[in-house]
Structure formats: C-alpha cells, structure tokens
Length: 158
Image 1 (cartoon, helix red, strand yellow):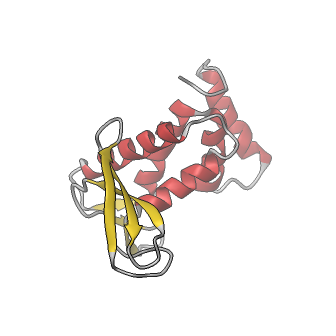
Image 2 (cartoon, rainbow, N blue to C red):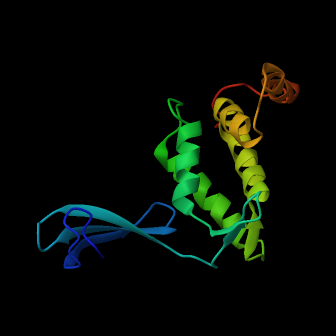
C-alpha cells in the first residue's frame, strides 16, 4: 500500500479489525519510511460495475464518488457517519446483485433517492434537486408535495 504522505510502498499493517456489520476490514498502517500512520478499508467486491452516463459514456463505478455526493446531500444534517456507510454498502450491494455489469446513472440515482427518502427528507430534496436538475421553485414544490403526501415526519427517520 502506498503511503499517502511520502508515496513509499514500504508500509506495515499494525492493526486489523472488522467493522460492526463485518462487511469491511479496517486496517491501521504505518509507513516505514516516514512513520506516517493511516487507515485503509477493505471491502468485498462482488463484480466490476460500469456506469453508463446520460451522454452514453461508460466509466467504472466509483464508490467514493457515491459517498461524496451523499455527504454533500447530508451536510449539516443529524445523520451519523455509520448510517451513511451502511446506506452506501446497501446501495452498492443492490447494484452488484442486480446481475448487470453495466448500470445506468439513472438507475443509481433512483436507488440513492429511495434510500435517502427513508433516511432524511432534507438530504432527499437536496439530492433530487441536483439529480433531477431542478430549474425553478415549482420543482421543489412538487417534491415537497410528494413527501407531505406520504404523511411522514419531515426530519430524520429512525
């Protein structure tokens, strides 16, 4: 593993342990060149996924990109990091178990929105506004109307 500080390949694992749900192995490492300590995570990958973008381009699926987009949607929301990680793992497992090697960005977006809708209304609306490319206030009203029609509280769901 390359050291993120100095770039050396001479690193050593100091500690390994599974996460709570045992879906990820957390490894504490130290660089033997500069003594920098860092953490890596190891996950099972069932299959290589390719995302078909709206313009037809094909790119490898990037779990970290999914995490970053969800973090933006959840910024300043009372949602723990563990819940975010669990949701991302659920989404990735759903994509991997779909049986398809190529998945449209639209399908990913819909799955993300389903999961966000169950987790946090504000994050759901934020994500929807980007994913559905909202252009005017009426677009927000439509989504908010859908949420209020459900009769669910408009805060974080347990």
